[in-house]
Length: 114
Image (cartoon, rainbow, N blue to C red; front, top):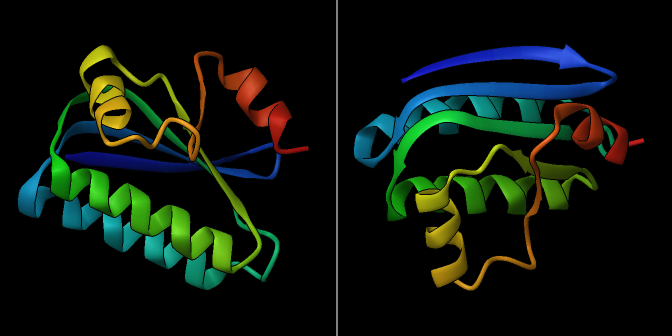
């Protein structure tokens, strides 16, 4: 899995390319934890761009949920961008639809943090 981190409009965007499964998901966890730890309380604004994520399993979903919890504790917000059909189905089956804000347009997602 490759993860590119960039700043856009005060939002940390993580462009994820690959699969968020099993031990591969630990790389994502480490990057997310580092971003959260380095941010001030209330300043965590994170967008996970999942356009090039080919698969995600329950451990990957667990990483995303843990990130959501950690960001919430710091008074921040996390959202998902370009969630594909199979990943969206996993979120729906897990009854997490109401937890994650999901967007199909990056500009709209960035604007939602303002």
